[in-house]
Length: 273
Length: 302
Image (cartoon, rainbow over all chains, first blue to last red; front, side):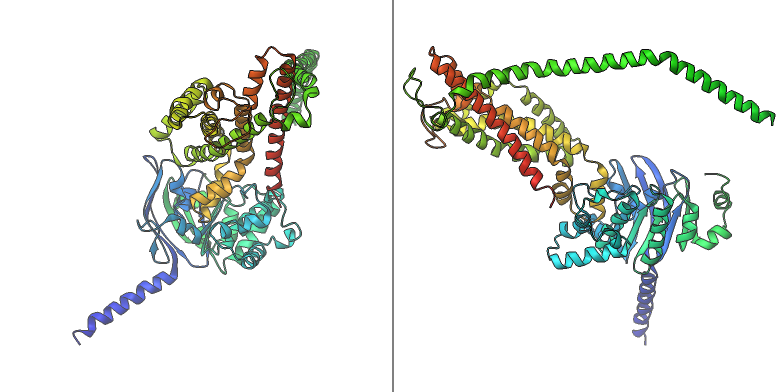
């Protein structure tokens, strides 16, 4: 009896840990992002649920892009920048010393503000780049993944007949979907999007928004956006940031309809920012 | 209502002023435009004329000397006008080819280090500084170094000494061009590579380098053209001979060297051979340049 008790307690603890690990795909714990000695994000704590869309909103310079880039260790690629704190993805702290950032980035994809297909590669090669350069040689499998990724990015029908043309020959919106396909080809569990529609026209933007709604069935998506309507349309959760602080985080409906903080309310209603 | 008409009249006033200014400056602008256009054309001609006249002169004097015998046979007895410059052509191909095989990989890899890996360390700054110094070094000095270090230690003038000396001239050019070209490749492509979890080495090799390929290739072509015409370091390293290639540690001939020797002979036939050799050298450089670019183009897209 006296021996069993601690074991039972441990079991319970384990279950709780497992449960919370299932519940939250990404846990951000006390993360600070630095540019030299300037602290661009301050002690951010935030948990992201699996297979949801989470939007980071806030005025320019509030640190939302920096926070996003901390989530796949791209932030530290900027000269002079570093981050501290813990970002736990599936129970693994990606800032642990034993973790190779390259391995992390294979599981956490990223789409950038400006479409950046590789300029010397064809449409097909762009999507295949991550696979091939990570050593996948089997041509049949590469071809299958490329097609599936392009389908998932809602681009397949538009490019299937010109798959060997340069990726740069596509329109801006198509290029961005190509970049999404390229990220999806790596089968990421988390997809980070840094204002993916800011350089696109309304039609291109709405196609990508539509895409997000279907993608969240399989991927956890975190999106930075300047466009509050977009955040309201596509996201399940919204985080509002201001001057490096996370001001408020919660269900998108709640943030937009009944924000708790006055600052959030003022930003959402367009009184500043 | 009044505000509206006011703003309208202000708008018209400005547009009138603007229109007048444009009209008054119009003739002057057209004139200036023509003047600058003519000036640029004159500059283009000034740059082309010497080049064209040299080329014409070489073709005029050299074309008659060229024959199958000229490009395949060794030289006949001095002053006879028989034979050709076969050994010099062969020697140039071997020495320049070997020098390029040494210098291109070393130069490109060093350039990659400076651009992608060094991160402004003191070491990298030092390398950059000495690389620039090396670019400006007189080629005869490099020839003397080749003579002292290689020729004296092997005990013979040799292909190897010539190729290494020429590669020392070529490396700093390739390093500089590679570094500068890689820097122009937008950072966003490297970023995209990182976001796919591709290792840095592979990003550099398969994403950044292809983007800089044309620039680097141009640099290599310029560097090869430069060393193909070098004479001074060859005097000190390969010596020149009227025989064909005998081995990598033996002496060999080269076209610039042959031209220099032929020009210093008193015979009319030797001078004709010299012009012929010059034309051959120009044609070889042209063929190399076009050929390399064609090969690179062919491999670019499927």
